Amino acid sequence: MPKPIGLLHPGEMGATVGGALRAAGQEVVWASEGRGDATVKRAEAADLSDLGTVAAVMGACDVILSICPPHAATEVAELVAGFEGTFVECNAIAPDTALAIAATVEAAGTRYVDGSIIGPPPVKPGLNRLYLAGPGSEEVAALFEGSLTDARIVSNEIPDASALKMSYAAWTKGTWALVLAIRALSRSLGVEAHLLEEWKLSMPDLEDYSLHAGRAAATKGWRWIGEMEEIASTFAAAGLTDGFHVGAGDVYRGIPRITDPPEDDAELLEATLDLLRQAAAARGA
Image 1 (cartoon, rainbow, N blue to C red):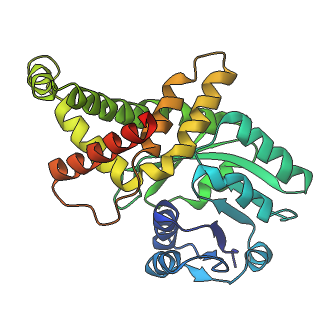
Image 2 (image 1 turned 30 degrees about the vertical axis):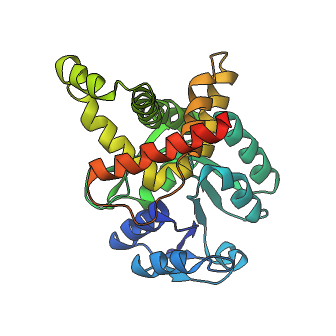
C-alpha cells in the first residue's frame, strides 16, 4: 500500500491542495498539535487524517509538503529534522531562503524538493499550479496526477521553483499594493475622482483592478508582508533595487485583516483605503 502524504499545515491553500489530493485518491495526513480550531475545521472539511503530532506524520509518510505563510517556512522545516523521506518546500520564499532550508534538512538526512504554488486554491481545473525543482521532482509531480493541482517541473536545480514564484508574485501582489497606494495618495490630495476619470479614458482596466486589489489585500494581505520581504530580498540578491517590494510590504502592513468583509467590492475598497489612511496618519504622527 502506498504511504500517505503529509501536509504541514492546512491553511486555506494547504487544505485545498490536500483536498485535491484526496479527491485524486491519495491519503493525506496532518498534525493538529498546537493548531487552532480554524485549522482543524479546514482539515476536516478537506477529509485529511489527523495523526496528532509532526513526529507521527514523519513516521507514517515518505513525502511531506510544507504549505504555510512564508514567515513560518523555516520553522516548519526545522520541525521535520531527521525525516527519512522527501520534504517539499511549497512556500513563497526567496531563493536564498530556499537554499538555506535545503541545507538544513539535507544535513539531517532528508531529501529536499523546491516547490512553489501559483494561482488560487484549486477548486476547479486550471486554477492552480505547483512548480517543482530539484532531484525527486518527478516523484512528487506523480503524486498530483489526476488532481486539480497541475504539478510542473521547472528544472533539476534548487531553487528554480522559488525563483519563479518570486518573479511572478513580484508583479501580482506588488502591483496590487501599488495601485492601492496610488488611490490612497490621490484621495489624500483631493484628486481621486479626476484620477478615476482619467483611468477610464486612458487605462480603463485600472479601476476594476484596484477593486480586486482591495479585496485581496483586505482578506489576505496580512499573509503577504513576509512574501514581500522575501521578494525584496530576492531583488537585492540579484543586484536590483529592493525598494518596490519593501514599500509593498509597508502597504500590506497598513491593512490589518478584515475578518468579515462586505460582499460589495467598492465598499470593501473604501474600508481598505481607510486603513491605509490611518496607517499613514500614524506614521506621520
